[in-house]
Image (cartoon, rainbow, N blue to C red; front, side, top):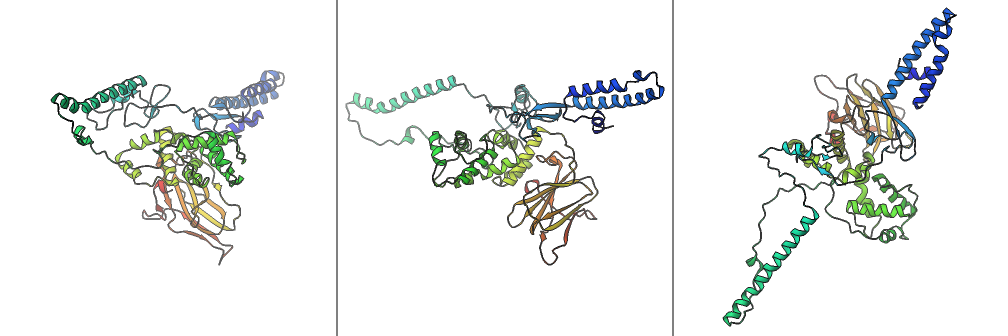
Length: 492
């Protein structure tokens, strides 16, 4: 007996509270208990079998209730039953689709004591990545390590005292050099000559050792900071008479997708819209130009695409966890990452996916059925059939329009099954990720996945066979050769 059959016996929904199951159990026991039919042997036998079935169903329901937890959504107030082993920090509400738990306010994070670890010290006093304390992390650093150990930054009082002492010392030194020759000429009764003395003669320039140049990655915070202005400046940008309402709605949609609580994009310039635009300028170092909002759309395009796949992209971007994780990669992986064009959203999305998978270590999710996950078209006339081989791997596929370079369709195909879809006419590129364990759309098949693409473009033309079906087979050929090309996970 499974949980579905147990719920049918109790005639209740899976979303019912535990008190309802307990009350229904007592009601059924009051009807089917064998002692109530002691005078009728046939009914007593029937009631005994029915009571065993009720007890078995109640045990299954109680076990299922103990393995779930009820979480209340902070946005719509709906109750959600989630597995107790699920990472609740990233669970979504079944009613409104928003994150169940509000993101914690951004605080200054303390890095792990081991400089080779990408984690930070959490509320428990241990690293969120390796699980060690600061002292344990420092003890893991070898004595002959080339990388310097992290030291705690001096407090504000110590920094102030240091600056005051340096200022006094430099003032005394400057006064000594200014009046040294004058005092000497005064006692010798000689005029003071006006000689130009270069600065390098008194204080020779300090030669610093060359530091290895690190590649500038677009996914990290930029060194430039936006000039913080009053709210009236950003209100004037949005109240420009040449700015149409459709452009304001688009600005609001971009800010909301990135992660700012702007409310419903309605084209109205409210205090929320102004504060969110100001916050974006501060967070991403953006300086509005005369071409606003075109310059805003150009600046936010990368972050908008990243936020569509990673809802917590704003929090990742504003911390140093991703940078520490990349620096802690082995030499082979670090060299591979440094050669990537990380200003492209598709490549950066895959890199962040691997970073989050190794950091949070999610558990496998139930395997979806074969079918379309999402599509970006309304009308379709051509037919495409994709077949897979009966093996251990399942597939997550993408169909990309070669002319526009936009993803038109994504789907999940179980091993040994066939997917039949309708698409608009055009030329498409087929890419796939294959693996055994499924971790959801955010992590796909994890770090053990393999990636490939169909070697030829898929042409869905109206002529000469408008009613024909184009078939593609993701089947390994004989003699160890594959009918598809292997690609990197960053090219998926």
